[in-house]
Image: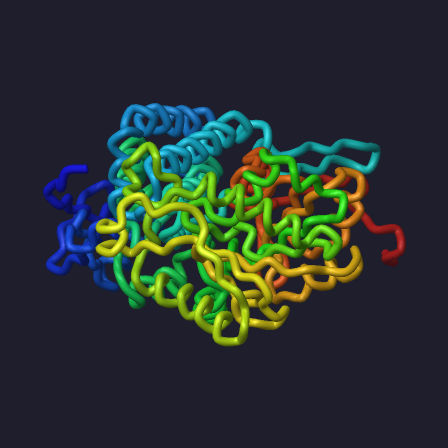
Length: 493
């Protein structure tokens, strides 16, 4: 891929692009000496302007018809489709994920946006109940200004998952992307913002002071956040004084349970499991991060797993058609993942490198990590109990179903999980796992269905995105009662 001149991204406040004095560079994790582009470092004052613009735009936008909102969103969807090749290339350059993965992320985003458009009118229309007791209307009202804060690992899909339902429900929004992948998602937001009235969708970038303003400003009615659990704790505290609505999709340490009746010779199933560990270099909140295998098949499973991983994993230039795994997004994440691997190895675990490195020279220059499997770790080792968010996975044995369920549930997290084996047996086990989603014989993005709700339990978050719940969560339920008998019979005259 030839080096291109850096692009410059602007903030969008009240329909206008805002230039800033300070900008932050975003490097290419494949070639860290290349700056892909610059994102603004907005001030707290500019953030307040964006919030005020959204606040002022809300009354008129909330009164628009659902048909108009859907029509505007459909126009944005078509323009995103037209721009997909350019945006996917930009995402790969700034993020490091292979081009097929970038196209896949945009594809899932469009799938959700189209689902939201197709279902918004029916889901948001409310209900009318009539009986001999009277009439009750249940309306789905817009909430107000939504502050959306999104992460770097899937910047486009984890922004559109918020933008589409929020705007379709009649809310306005101020969105702040991660500085580790701000460029491609800003292009998407600009496309959408241009199809809506001024102030309906605003974009700011920046550091902690911007985030604090977005989460504490009294004009913000709802916070939609995807990111780390520790950051979420600060957000909750910042929002406490004004008791805001919240949707929080947080960390996960998702368990995969491989039952004794799993067919280790099923190459397609084994490949799905490998992909569920290493897609996007393991940098997905819903990736399978720890694998528990029934002791009776453990040795054979590990052998077949390594064979499957060595076939699929090819590390290198994310623009190469031969590559399945690109670099890790940033050096800080590389160092964290490596520290977990080193800790396990010091304690006696065996670390096995997987797949092929296609270009050794490029590998040494970028933020690359060769995927690894860790064998012989203790159940309480950090590499097992912490969210690695990178290309490594521990595989551990279990004794029986009860043991497997205990191991899976022994976590502060509960985002997704998976069970692999005979479907009937797997379903029995799945019902006992504490998670927002449990998949059977698949995991991670491969098992994601935007038609149904997604979110976590325990410290993996609150609220649900996707599905009809993902639309309703951007509304307030407003009950209007018109009883026929206006006098209560037990109150004396």
